[in-house]
Length: 294
Image 1 (tube, helix red, strand yellow):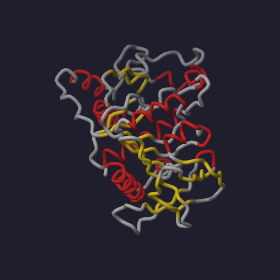
Image 2 (cartoon, one colour; image 1 turned 180 degrees about the vertical axis):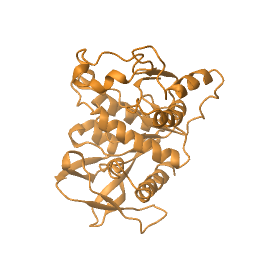
Image 3 (tube, helix red, strand yellow; image 1 turned 120 degrees about the vertical axis):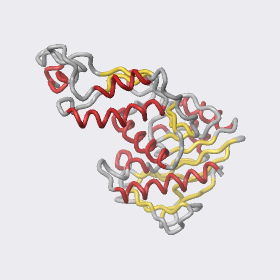
Image 4 (cartoon, rainbow, N blue to C red; image 1 turned 45 degrees about the vertical axis):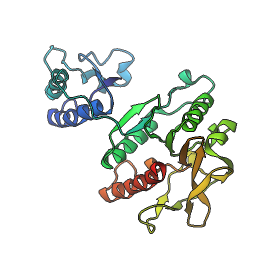
């Protein structure tokens, strides 16, 4: 997996850049990246189109205009030299799913994903899973390991492939199921039908099998500003809001099962979460994963 066009916006502040690279690169290695392409090799004239509209990119090079190595990039080279002797990443215990198509061009007739918001959700999810002592790898090809899908748009064939994978014994946790992707293929995977789109300021949820029954999770951020209600057909309810409406479901499909909700916990903590908020939403992941894995 090639990690491409990364760098830092703190290119003129060497120490923050060193700190960032020293923490970031080993985590990418552990997540499955084995190629690393910096943006960009050398600084350039900020007046060159199309970069004249984004002149900050002119000084993101590994080398400046005088061919001097930029201070703060040393950990990148140190990391590269270490790869030949660096231990292989820990064997994954859980997979985080990357949708197969990310842009409107790639998706064809399927609804596109907004890559920036998807990346933020996947980052939050990855962080929670690793804090729960899981070794996480990112994949587009599920295997024998449990799989987590954060809120995203999935194409019809993707939905059908996931249904077959679950039926063969796969264990799937799916957050933030999108209503406009919901057709017959989703109904077969989820064991439910979409029933209503609700404008609401918040939804408060209890999980039936949480180790802390008094824990209430308050959702205030919804995709497109709407909360999606569902009616189970062949799935069972494992979480309800405080009014008693079903919001979290478990569907056994063949030899496997999927636990899912239209709610997205990855969107709730905000851009600058407190430690208390992170611990709270991490407990959601621990509780709902216990339903998936047992």
